[in-house]
Length: 236
Length: 256
Image (cartoon, rainbow over all chains, first blue to last red; front, side):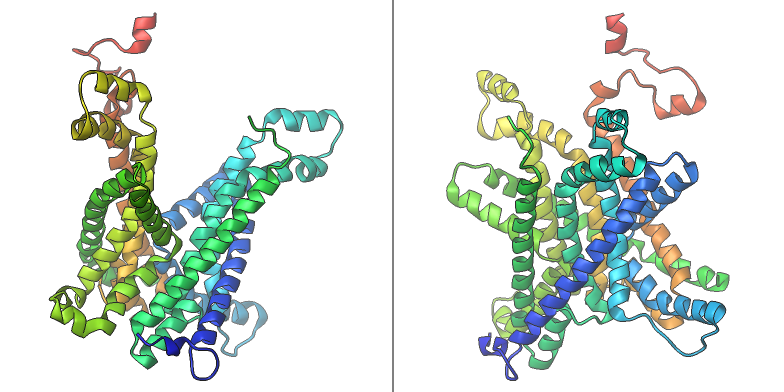
């Protein structure tokens, strides 16, 4: 095992690996945010009075949680570009070849998966807010928007935080799958390095350690956020 | 929608189901045994045993399965002369061995936490009663702790089984042609992802549906007292009353 391979600069792969880790973090964070937006929407659908909306959200979470992420990635990777070209041609009359950027493809795939898991988390958190709080808000004359913004959202965020922390850990690990379609994040960078130096163990163990570091640091961040969010809550 | 392609590719994908199932079942079975050991170590008073189990679980849960698979399959190649010397290379060059090893080690980490939760939920009174009857050590674990813990851990373990069925798809990245591997091969050759996705997705959904049903059945079997006054699904389907002939009256009947 040749550790000088991991040096900084032109001679070593250390800086490339760290940039790869940054890319992992960037794609994980954007997929996570997309996932929370999707999750909030799907949770609202699951809690709605309309049977069709509930049914649609159920289909979405069942499919995404029951099918391997890799399969979803292949679907979007091979099918997303064709869909985009059909829309561009049919709606805008644009006939040139266009394709989805690989970052966007990855973000959509991982975001869809994060969305399905956060749907359940957010739905549970909404149900955890006591009904009396909403009634009290209505009694003091708050309108629908104000009730949502002042009463529902802050409490849902607090109840959902531990679950969303788990979703973040899942999302971070799932980004490694995007390497199979060629986004140069830490896993892909390790494969490239392993291929050109014939030292696969050195590179994959580096990726392993980088993931461990990212997961540990972000986990600590989430624990802090939980303490902060619960600072006003009385505990026995 | 290309119906011809669907007609041609579904037999290929269905024929790959055994590969997926072999990966899932073998790694779940070995991983379950390992998980019990790890859970017991995590609950032991020995600081060293606790630290080893904690470290194992922490590391395996904090890193992606894909890295673990690549580390074992490709990473071992870097030390090929060493593994040839000790006779392990025969196994490590085989993608099946590497995939099952990685999946096993991974599920052992997750399952040990589920089992630990189950063991910790065993009420103290049960342990005291068992000790009062003179049980200890392995007998206590086998007769009292383990059966109660498994009952508690079953719903969580059901989720883990589904996650593992999904995780077997990663074996396709190291040349194993299970359902996802075959699907990718067809997609790359035909550029018709939607058709193939529908078939492969339906296969996984069917497997996972069967898993949830089996886990539900096992839950009922392991805690029959909770389901005694409920009619069987067959009785509910046919509209007949609960079949309670020959059994002791249900709790709700005794109360009236």
